[in-house]
Length: 597
Image: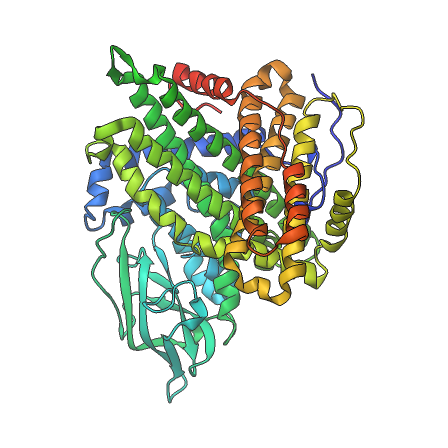
């Protein structure tokens, strides 16, 4: 039964922590347009037809194979979707480009090559290039005729990107910058034609450059032998007085950090999308195996321990998807708002991604950890066979591990989640102080035991609101107690980040399920409600544990007891039979033979 949808409210980055949202404020995958569903299906079909039949050949790094697949994807328009029409792109919105990242994300090493090419391999030129640079490079990159790569990391500068040692000095005739140094872990490096590379002009001005394959003094090393994503080309780049024309400076001299860090915001969201695509494929593989593998004269899918694993895989994937498209829609709306205000295309999308940098960091952490959970439990479901290279789940397990490292390690992204939130509060962009003081006053008052609200999902909405209060209690006390020292207390910051991640996810999945019920009715929503309630039940425990760990690290005595009392009060979930809920979730997938949410 449908109800009136309230006016849509688009929150600023981080505002979800202090403001409530209604179902009408979120975007959910069930709302994909017909065109978006067609694009989704095209991506699935491309992987099934072109990639999965030759995964072993891809992993062997057969010369020319990966480049040919990139070109084929370009011929089908899968590289051009979100690029401007003036350069041969299709000009689709950010949500559509996120769909492509998700549904091409289950292709193992191929997915890494495509994501690097369409993301860090192309976007720096699109967003920061001169008109001449864009005209020269973008059309060939989005057709797949040329492949792109990105050179930021060095042997001694990973997370500390600005600590790079590669240098650039102007030649005596003023026509070239001479680059000297080394870059490592360069995805697509072995076959790319175009490289975005960062170096320090005159030893201190961090700057971006476009470097073409074949540039004098520029060479690539041999392919790295990696634990996973074996088919992804990964090499080192070497520069020995590499002659890069002055017209290939990307952006402004000394402003390379703007390119590097702004591109990462988009990359983090899209990494979550790709990880989600991989997770859904791995869930399908695990369901298929569990249905056909028999032990004790019955399929192992009949056993409760296996059902638990399958259900938990599905719950985490569904939650990640809910948070992903909620954020992608915010970025899309902000981009359109900035475009309507007269900002150029590049500044609009980068500005939108910066606005939601906190949420992009959250998505990167959660998406990569969902995939790790899914493939790990997938191997467990396969038992000894999961350890055999004959079964694809072993490849999925190896390939997953890198996601917690690149686009900023998950530790860095947890720290960034809190760092950006606190900085926005200090800058006046996010009003945390008022809500934090209100929660402190609430703690000192007598709890309100008024009449229970019997409206649908009222208890879940109250729990999510309380989880936010638990964060404000713990974070507010930490900042008051530690002041500037809080920046050095990484363990506490990561505890607080875990509270934020669980709470953002909880609200995202709750809003999605509420919206599904508004549109489809209660009966059709029952299985989604099981997913949501199971996640919220576990999230309350996770927030409680992380909150207690944080508080016990900086408080003691009466102060400690009061804050812990508040965290306990704000993380109470209604009793719920999660065993039966998980069984219903698993049974639906087992009956259908696939992930079906």
